[in-house]
Image 1 (cartoon, one colour):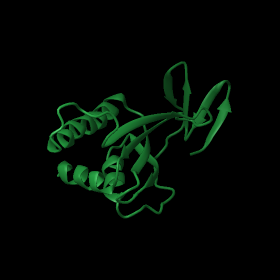
Image 2 (cartoon, one colour):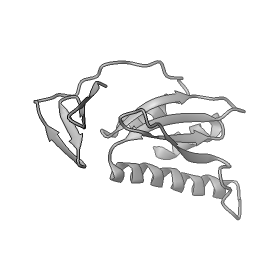
Image 3 (tube, one colour):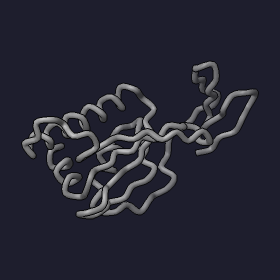
Length: 144
């Protein structure tokens, strides 16, 4: 993503962000620029997130039966982020009840972490972390 400081504002792909407003200064078009290598086991989650126009994944790992699986993403629309987090929350309740747990365990199966990266244009990165690949696979089946 191209960015530069212009008159105290951040210029990104033909738009100026300043005073909490976005102004077009040139006609622009969004185009795919790069491709990425993604672990096959996490690919469905990466594709699910990237189906949202306002989401861009920034990193992922498929994990295995003992290690966690995760995907990091940036989201520019609050409504979309709320929708994604609602899906994760409802799945966490579902998987907790599937294991007959009376109290929802915090961070037992799936969690969402927020990372602040002040040097980035979109400084907040959300990470969805699944305890292991089996929980990730269950989530993807639950989505269909």
